[in-house]
Length: 115
Length: 107
Image (tube, rainbow over all chains, first blue to last red; front, side):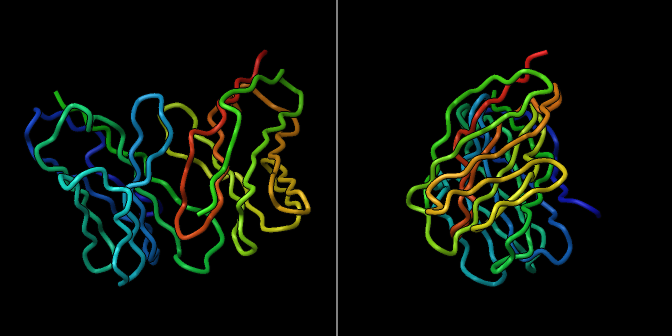
């Protein structure tokens, strides 16, 4: 596709359930980022993938959060045993990678609501 | 990664220039300054970026001080559609977004 694609666009789940959010970056982009944005707040960095390097997981808020990137392309963010405070918009972005000083391309986000 | 400091909110009259400041006093010599904006319920949108020299594109101008410790984003003729949250970011290893400046363009 032409841009970063995220799915689902909206997800409502019950507290304690697991959820998976998917990000399909722009073809050829080696860098992939996940951010979280709670209502009225700024973007909170979660995790960063760059090529085959070990991901930077320094932003993950707890061990209930994990992410993987298969084949250097599609990424899945998994939240286990969801809590109400996990409710937020989860944004994915991609770029060409290290040495690239240009634009970071964002998807439209996945809005997660935990009841 | 260098931190940035921005005022939480600003107002600007429609048609006037909007000048959004950003402090990044711990910036390193090879770190770029980026500006993004986020209009309600949308993903962030790239505006402009620069290293040392002032930059201009169709959306905005970026003025970086000689010591690189601060910068200003200029929207030359603000419109109502420019109402958004504006993020100043110093690119180290990752893009860290702060809380940005909420710009309101007033008719």
